[in-house]
Amino acid sequence: MPVAVCFITPELKLRQSQTPDMVEVWSRHSGIGASEMTVTLIPSEQQFGKPYAVISHLYLPSVWAEEQVTSLQLGLASALVDCFAIDESQVLIMTSMIESGLVVEGGREIHW
Image 1 (tube, rainbow, N blue to C red):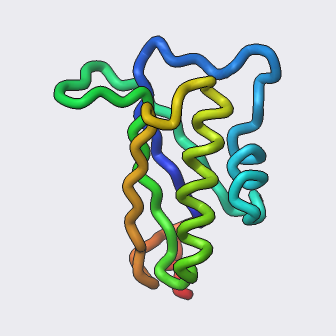
Image 2 (image 1 turned 30 degrees about the vertical axis):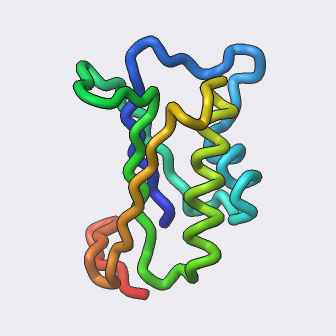
C-alpha cells in the first residue's frame, strides 16, 4: 500500500521521450515490488513560499521496516526526478505511517 499523492507545478510534464510508467520507475529505484504501489499526480494552482516542482505525501503501512521506508522515500524521489527531468532539489517528500485499521479498501477495513 505505498501511496504517493504528488502535487506538481502546472508546467511540469512527464518526459515525452519514453512516457514512463512512474510506478515501475519507483519500484525499480526502491527495489520494492510495484503491485500495491499507487501514484496520483495533482496539478497545483498556486504555491507560496519556498518553491518545489513536486510536493509529495507518501503514505505507508506502519509495518514497513525502517530500511524499506528509506528505500521507498528515496526511490520515489529518484523516480520523480527521472520522470519529470528535474533536479532533486525540486522534490519534497513527506512520509506518514498509517496504523492498522485506518485504511478502507473495497468497503472493508484493512488490518496488518
